[in-house]
Amino acid sequence: MRASLLRAIPLVIVASTIGCAAPYTFVAHAEPNPFVRPGCRAVVEPLHVDRLVVGDKPIAQYAADKKAESADSFDEDLRAADVDFHQRIADEHGSLFLPGAPDNTFIIRPVFAHWEPGFYAYFAAHPSEAELLVDVLAPNGQLLDRIDVTTRVSASMFNPSSGGRMREALKQAGHDLDIYISDNWLCAGR
Image (cartoon, rainbow, N blue to C red; front, side, top):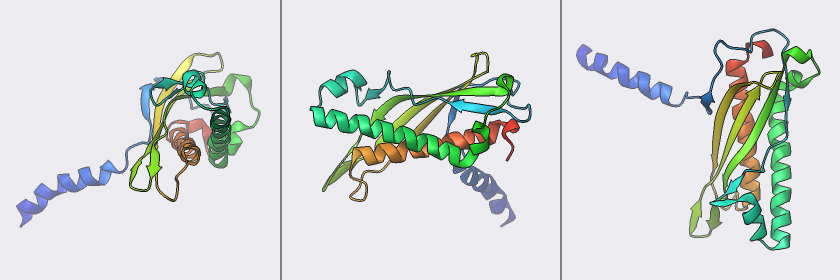
């Protein structure tokens, strides 16, 4: 009995840590940690979408292939998703975005790299997926951290529009960026 219990302990440890993985992946990570000086601040730039790939098409081609009304709707979805992304970050770390010392203010540059709109039809569905690459720059513009944040949103009768799923995905990406800040920015104390 004791031997079987001891063999089960590693499985329990692995199973309990699987759900605890960070919702972001480091592509580049500054060492030692530059986010330690108390009172740091941040500026979050608007989403950069100039290199966005939608499905397998660059954004310019994707928009050009749409009817004018549909292209306008997509642009509106991008703007609304950007607002939701920024609002989600501000909800958790609002004081981080107050004015501060220029030499302790970091720049967060989110790049919306890929959007898979997914689809919902009565008998079939495919989830939507958003991938953001987020650069964190020092006050002098030097790259400190780059993280990949990829979120998936189910397509269902409760969330049938790709625009609604985009907003939900970018709101989740904002939450994931909050977790990155909480995990790594010692200077952003609560």
